[in-house]
Image (cartoon, rainbow, N blue to C red; front, side, top):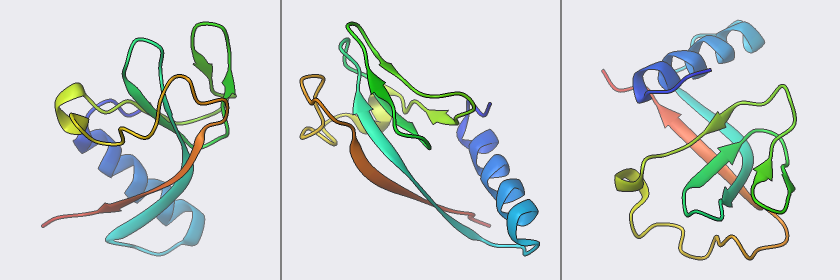
Length: 96
């Protein structure tokens, strides 16, 4: 699973090319955004299930956990208290 931005961009580019057979400089990924009880945001490609202490994403599932500094002050409307995950879309653009 990708852990850094560079790995994420490479993963998205490779996945797009495998699925479509086309080289693409921009990829849009639909998924779900949740906030964990301890505060961090998580974005997954499959709808998660809320547990007592955390959200669980089904396997196999790609999950992106942005750092605190990447999302500081962002997505304040996504809270642990939410009963359902928030549908979200991430667009990744390859920069040259």
